Amino acid sequence: QIPVACERLARQVETVVLNACGRSTPDDSSDYSPEKELQSFYEELVRPFLRSDSSRNHPLQNPTFALARISQLEGSLPDRLQDAVTEMKIACEERRQLHLQNTIHGWLHGWLSLHLPLSVVLLVLGIVHIVMSIFY
Image 1 (cartoon, rainbow, N blue to C red):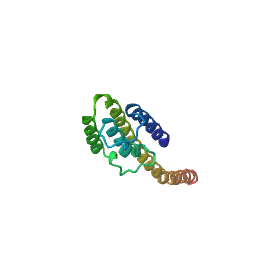
Image 2: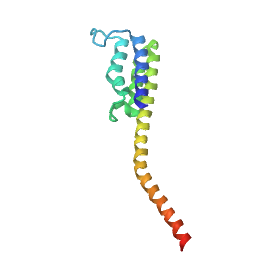
Image 3: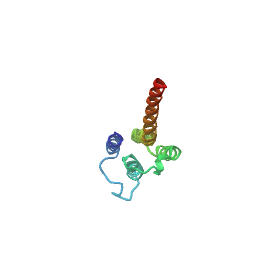
Image 4: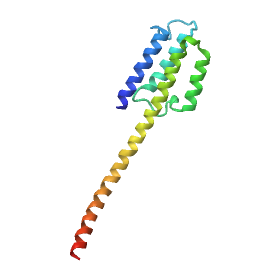
């Protein structure tokens, strides 16, 4: 379900950013605007991170870097865009948690490949022990 959760996060954040910034692209003009800064941050860092196939080496995977970078963005944007930044911050934290869940899921499957054969051996040896104790 992790790809589904990532898709939901990406759509949610994209909707918030589009509502805050409008439908312009970050390269529409060379003039500075806070909306273009927010949209550029979203396009360059947040959108790739929210994808289900994002790299574990993505800069936003590091909570310290993510907090510093998002705090820097928060400080440079007006109040009307703060809700969008907050939504991106929450989505990035949830994405980091999904990465962690995926890692733990892999560990559990690895443990299962070791645990299952050992359990079968223990069961067989238990049955052999019962049979041997009955006859001897």
